[in-house]
Image 1 (cartoon, one colour):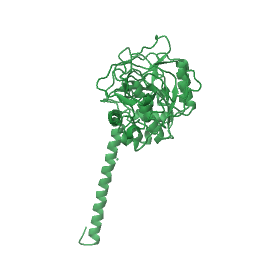
Image 2: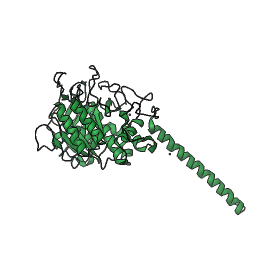
Image 3: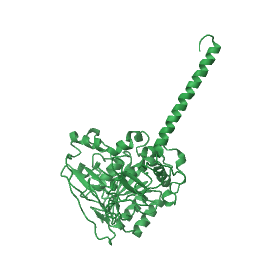
Image 4: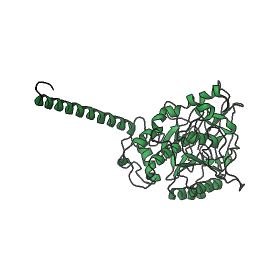
Length: 421
């Protein structure tokens, strides 16, 4: 479930329920409790807006400044299959392409967000927010130079699986290199599976939220549970598994899901919890990699993300963290040797292949490697200097380098119908 708090108007409490489990509806995972002590502000309130930048703890955890020296996602389009995106938000101006809607209006370009919780806009902000509002103190996404393709498939909490399927196909046909689906259903709808396979066949990275019903039966969710899809679970600011997140054997990667700030519609901001946001961060990480290494296939992009992920306390696969907590900087710095074949590793029985020891993660290996290279370089310089000095003495005697969904910061949700995670 997801808790959304909109700024400035009021703090909202949402506890919408999905329809009967037998009905293949898609739902966003929403639930909430009122949050105390939160400031109310819009994008035109500079004094308080700095709270947004200071509160984006995932950027600090990911070492975003180091990431952006390598890649900012330029040249990559990320489709957000959701409630539309507020293209007029100060932090999203120029970032949102003309998209489409699949809820009955052929003129719909997806560039507005008419949902009650700003869901699509929040996901887009996490991915491609520029932070330009209020003199540069606004909300910054992890891949701030990527573009968002908005695909509206719902106006609120629920969506029809057919609309989701159409949206995924539309995104694939319009050259989205990454497709984000922050919603889920308990029903493995055949049209939805066909759409996912279609997108995978078009070399798209498909990312989906695991859901927020980890404390309520932890049911399967689709498209997250479909083969080939990055199934994203959630963590908190201490890198601990977020207990509300759903998880299981199909979990692929974990990412920040608790206490997330992002853009909202009408120039506002939201603070929320949910695996919807975690999926947004993984989609942004995929955009960073695809931008830095444009020749990599979708499968190789996924392999970089899972091999370089950080999983506390072990190696291999874990039901809660999947192959680990994403480490975009390590994914960008990893050597070409990790790329492997072009095939999607999540369609393999052994996604990691020979790279099974990811407990410390590639970031540590790279850091140690860099230190070793530096040490060798210094040692070599000393040896050369000594040899040069000795030669000089003789000549002139005397001298000498890691399982859909969002909610405004609080409770839990379920993995059964297509709803926002």
